Amino acid sequence: MPWLSLTLEVEEAVAEAVSEALLECGAQSVSLEDADAGTTGEVARFAEPAWDAPRAWRRNRVCALLAPDTDVLKVVVEATRAAGLPSPPQFSVGRVEDEDWVRRSQSQFTPLAVSERLWIVPTWREAPDPRALVVRLDPGMAFGTGTHPTTRLALRFLERVVHGGERVLDYGCGSGILAIAAARLGAAEVDAVDLDPLALEAAGGNSRANQVAVRVWTPEALPPGDYDVVVANILANPLIVLAPVLTARARKGGALALSGILEAQAEDVAAEFRPAIDLDVTGSEDGWVLLEGVRT
Image 1 (cartoon, rainbow, N blue to C red):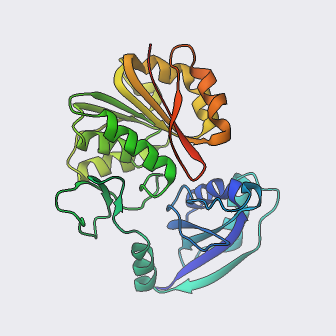
Image 2 (cartoon, one colour; image 1 turned 90 degrees about the horizontal axis):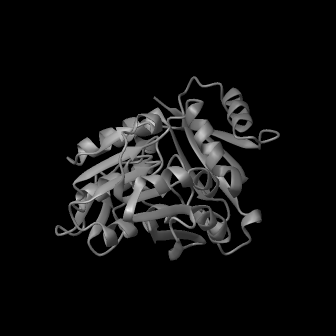
Image 3 (spheres, rainbow, N blue to C red; image 1 turned 30 degrees about the vertical axis):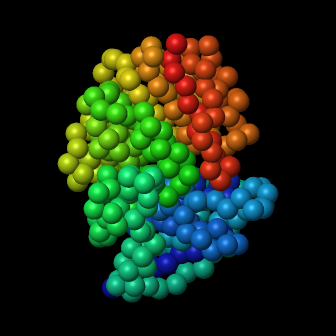
């Protein structure tokens, strides 16, 4: 059965919102590419940006797979409206055979070395290094397959601070990649929180597939308690709003790391966590930074 392939170009600043809206409007999968460089980013939530040109002028190509009987114009109009665009962008539609889109989708995702010992590996691939600590994760309908700099920064933080026996909280868990990695690194208890029911479903399923114990919660259902390690890979504005919640969840002497922050946003975010936690930039990649500190 042939599928419909929808392609449209939008400014990088709204590409995430458009891709998420397309999924909510029925797209089977969404991938993002830099429209100038042609590089594929992370499925479903973020594109991996190129930073060799001013951010305001970057454009992303959004490619969505739709069922053959889809009213494409209706999907485009609804998705762009939901993403806050004043009008739908230009788009093109093609047809893709089953075996072609499956092969094309899978070929985009190869084993990813986060560090020398930590790898993110799709289920259809073999781990390149049999000695590696592997997190098995396929692209899906929740952010987090390891290809975006913000995810890699958070994963490297966990590798540095989780030595075994810790209680870890992943707030805004998406696919559960950070929670699963924490469990694989030896954390004794891991809780994962997200507002999105699809994200919680994905995180639960992915943790079971990796044979690790991760408890998933909505924010209001998370039981009282604090944690040795709190990590949140979201975006700057939500992190600012969540500052009291995240601060309260980190025990005294516990580590807190925030990702999803652009370099220019770091000080604004850090200011919301003082004086309880003094956050410093401890990692950066492609214009994104990791803020890290210890609860006093």
